[in-house]
Image (cartoon, rainbow, N blue to C red):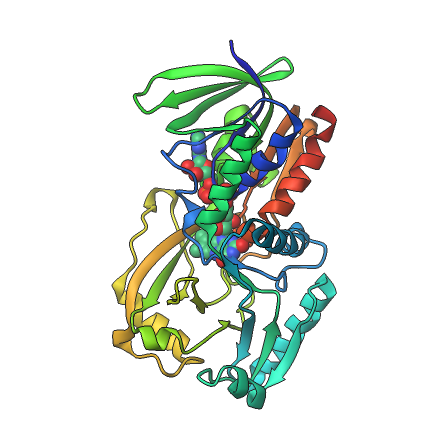
Length: 378
Ligand SMILES: Cc1cc2nc3c(=O)[nH]c(=O)nc-3n(C[C@H](O)[C@H](O)[C@H](O)COP(=O)(O)OP(=O)(O)OC[C@H]3O[C@@H](n4cnc5c(N)ncnc54)[C@H](O)[C@@H]3O)c2cc1C
């Protein structure tokens, strides 16, 4: 049976970042992907925002990997000419009551190590973003946007340069521990199966990362790895003049225990403006990427709180994505799981579960951390 050193399951931005990071050690590495190209799921259905790391509890993996990932991502984009823009972001308070929340966010972000945050008043908001209506705002200078497709393309080419490969149209169907290896059985498109063995397995299967963990024999209930799906939809502003009325990302103050950051306005690199995502928990059998036109008024009402120039006819349905969340509806914060499973009897098996936002921002940091967990095996 063919044997490789490392198998990475899933060619989303996390699997690709981990594969690119591990490919430099001269070990044989396959990244297995069920679709015919990379980044076909959550990694191409997000806001493409390079987050700063403001919202997450201090010392959480989300906070640490976001802050480190932000820095690594800008450096990599600059060095390799990957399209991106450090737009900055405003979190806006639309009432006096929300100004206290902004002060809390300022403190939280600063404690986390986010540099350059500052609170500004109405007068300064109208100077820098004259079309935005708000009582006060928190400016985040390190927030930006990235062309995530070009970024993933870059990661694939870095892998290729190091002789690591993405194997497409191949679904991981079974994983069995065999002595010190793992036997991976792949189902190809024509339903043909083949198997090979690997010493190290990295599970970065996104929405299916809990299923993959359970395939090897990990009890995902007792480990707390069971995912909940939370859909986020976007609407696009069709009027090209209105799309250019804001230069920065504009976010509301997030609601406590909310599944998302609130419907926000995100300019993209092509010069258009998107609103979203909203958040709605769905069943695992309810996956679809339709955008419900009946939600348009909800989007409009939310956005008009701080972008009063928008009108109903300005919005058309755009894309949607599904968050792989560990936090259930109304529940408290849950961190990313990045775990090498020796203590469950699966040495060399690393689970990356619940990698929702800010996973795109954090991916290079998560990749470094993953490498650290298996360093002794490389
Ligand atoms: C609406 C929304 C907005 C977001 N906005 C942002 C943002 O602005 N900034 C940010 O930093 N983050 C954002 N995120 C989070 C970010 O998109 C994710 O954290 C990131 O894309 C996760 O990447 P991934 O590789 O883990 O998952 P995915 O991209 O889902 O990749 C997993 C891959 O595994 C494959 N796979 C699954 N099962 C198998 C199997 N059995 N065999 C083979 N392959 C398999 C899938 O086909 C898929 O390609 C957002 C997420 C959503 C949903």
